[in-house]
Amino acid sequence: MMRRVPHHGTGYGLLRYSRNINYKDPEISFNYLGAFDGLEGTLKMSPFKPQHDIAAGRIREFDLDINAMVAAGQLEVKAVYTDVFAPGAIEFFMNRFHTHLGDIIAHCSGKKEREKTLTDYSHTELTAQALSSIEDLVKGL
Image 1: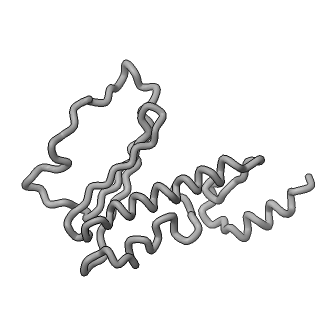
Image 2: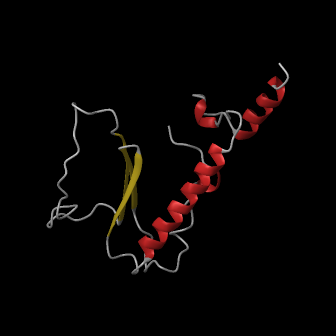
Image 3: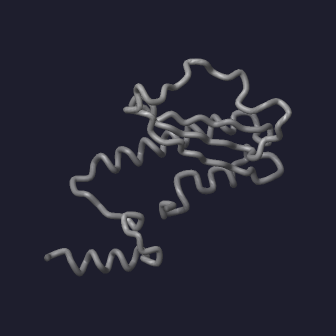
């Protein structure tokens, strides 16, 4: 289930309205590969790095591929992109992504009590306003 993030997520508008993008809106793919911790003996990450991320003759499906995974307790995020982007645009984007992710982690880490969000419930028609009303009704119970 996709998370319902306010303002369409951290990077909404960052790429679309940036002056660092040439003539067209980029096609973006975000792929979270999962957590690879605790798989010792089952799977092993290769120590070898490929020379290329994609075969030379293959046309990229997306102008920007963002791949993320957790390995050795660390979140790794990698961006692979085409020349649609101006020099420095992806570095700028990834720096902003890192900053916003740090802000989210700090915000969540500072919470004293657990908070439920819309994605904690399976009812797809539940709205933020309805959830807030339900929370108000059951607060003192």
